[in-house]
Image (cartoon, rainbow, N blue to C red):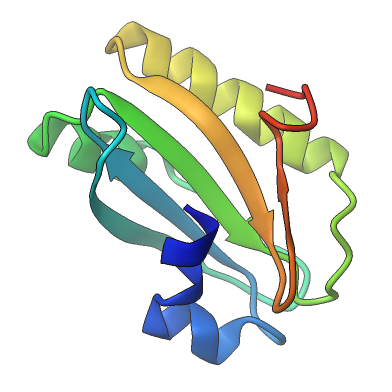
Length: 120
């Protein structure tokens, strides 16, 4: 997913100065079906509307999603807000049997996977 994210033009353009939140939608075999830019924020945050995430998931019949955002500061530290949002999205997904399989924080040169870190 990180390689896929690096090729999204809107994210590439704003990676170092504006936080973007993107959802990647996957089928049952974890193949990427599409992505949606949920929000574009400021240098230090963005607002995420769960209705936007799940309306697309339902329309595309996605079984799984990966939520993603960048940290313009290049700091890969997970904030309390990142953890809280992940829990909120995961709980909402469970109502529709849509699995949140990862939350990825990206920077220009690296990424942090909540799943790899044992946070998710």
